[in-house]
Length: 323
Image (cartoon, rainbow, N blue to C red; front, top):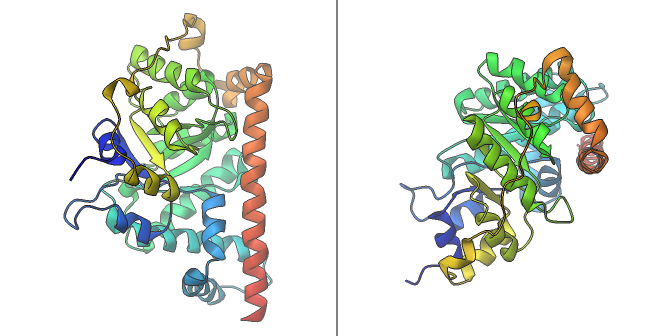
């Protein structure tokens, strides 16, 4: 069988699945003894998309019933609790097809609240453990705000793995390194436009300082973007179900396609070795304040995820009223 673009890419970078559909994971798994994917990533948009699918109705009602057994439908936390259980149940279905971690993202409204982020992360990890997935196989995605990175640093001391998401510049990546996040997820298409140079610079900076944090770009929308991204030599690449299917249907390309013309941006030592977590992340707050464009992108991403979370919670409340 001729190699596909997907198999070619898998030989160059670790492939993760940015999807919570077990059928997609199964379709791209070569054999039951050799899962194709390392990690499964997720966010509020992906969970929302699953919630309204007819074949996820049983799973969602199971989450509703589980929470109903512990609290009344009208309680302030009911919809969020159901959403968290549903997120874990979705991930549990994909878990058998992974060699690495399942990921779940903390609530967007908690992005600028360190303690609230910590509490939600602990809650998600506990739910995964209750469903047979150990803490060592769970990674919590946390937006790369100053408050979020301070939360990651605390969670790391508790043995909870974290990923810094919604990342758009090098200071954010340095803060994530200092917080001992196991991954950073720079948005390749910035929700709209490519940001190859930032990803290339993050990789270069991590190499320069000997960081153990791995680069896992996200938000990739075309096969051509995948090729361009692989040329930047990230550690991981997380790919949506639709793009996985397209890559599996395309032939391999010439090796030259995976060469990048980019050169790393030279950064001053005061940027590389500053303490971005001190004083509750004051330096990261300042860096974001000065970087208006990255701040705009961060806020846009948080609003997008918040909108999807609200939609899912409204749907849960509607279903719960009928149940």
